[in-house]
Length: 411
Image 1 (cartoon, rainbow, N blue to C red):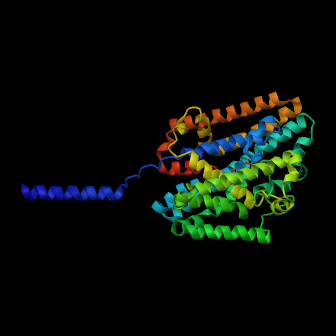
Image 2 (cartoon, one colour):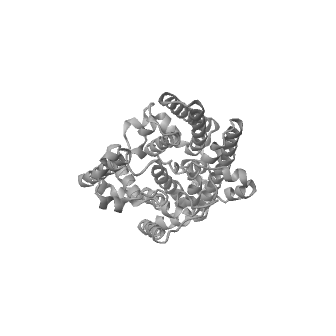
Image 3 (cartoon, rainbow, N blue to C red):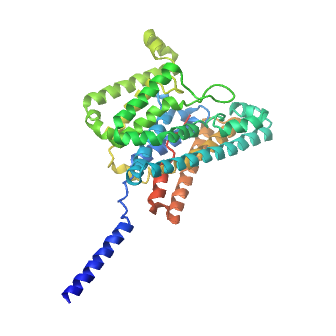
C-alpha cells in the first residue's frame, strides 16, 4: 500500500507540475495612479474651455498664468502611462508582443483621428452652409478641403492636413509609433534613452527638424521636439521619479520652482497689462522671446517641471481627496481620455457656433462651458458603466490597452 501511495503521489505531483507549467498564474494588478487620471481629466476640461472664444471663464485655465498649458500635462502623462503599462508587457511577454500592443494602440488612435476628422468636417460644413457663413470654414481651417477635396483627403490620411484643434492625435500617433525601440532601450539603460531624447531635441532646434504640413508650413506640434517630454514621462515611470524624490523634496528645489512660477506668472501678466512692460528688462525679453510652442520651448518645459514638482510635493499619492465623489467626474474623464477628447472637440466648435450666432456674453459663455463639462462627465460615466457591465476590466491585455489611453492633447 505504501508503494502504491508513493506512485499515486508521484503521479499527482507530476500532474500538478504539468498544470502549473500550462497555466500561468496572473500577476497581481497594478494599483491605478489616480493622480494621473485626475490631472488628465482636468486637462481635458481646460482644453475644452481654451478652445472656446476668449472670455471671463477662460481666465481660469493655466495658460494665462505661465508658459505651459494642458498640452504638456497630456504628453507627460502619455509617456508615463505608456512606459508603465507596455513596459510591464515587455518584461513579461517580450519585445515582439509589447511592440504589437503598441502598434495596435497606434492604429486605434489613427482610426479615432480619421473618424474625428470626418465628423468634424461634416459638422463645420453643415453649419457654414446652413447659416450661409463661409467664415466658419476659413476659421476652422477646412477651406482647402472644400477647394481641393481629392488632394486634401489624401493629405489628411497622411496626417499632413488637419483642421483647427486637431493637431494632438497625429502627434500622439507619431510618438507611439517609434516608442517600442526606445522603451526596450530604457528598460535596460533609462538614462541613456533620456540622453538620446535630449540630443534629438537639441538637434531639432539646431537644424530646424520638422514634419511638413499641408497646404504649407509644418506640424503645429513638432514630434522631434515634443518627444522629449514624452520620453521624460517614460523615464519617470521607469524609476526616474523615484531616484529624483530626494531632490524634489528638497526645500531648495521647491523654492526654485516657486520662484520660477512667479517669474512666469509676471511675464504672462505683462502680455495682458502693457503698463507692466517697462519693468521687464530688455535683455531678458531678447533672450526669452519668442516662446515657441511648436518646438516645446525650454521655458515651457521648465515651467511644466516646476508645476509637476510642486504638485507631487503637495499632492501625495495617498491623498484621500482622490477618491472624493466631487473629483470623480475628473477621474472618470481621465480614464476615458481618448473618447472624451474627441467629444470635447465637437463640443468646442458647437460652443463657438452658439456664441457667434447668439452674440452671447459672459453668462452664455459660462452656461456653454458648464454644459460641455457636464456632457463630457456624463459620457465618461457611461463609458465606465459600460466597461463594468461588459466585464472588460478583467483581462490584462485589455487593461493594458485601456490604461494606455490617450494622454496628449490640447492646442
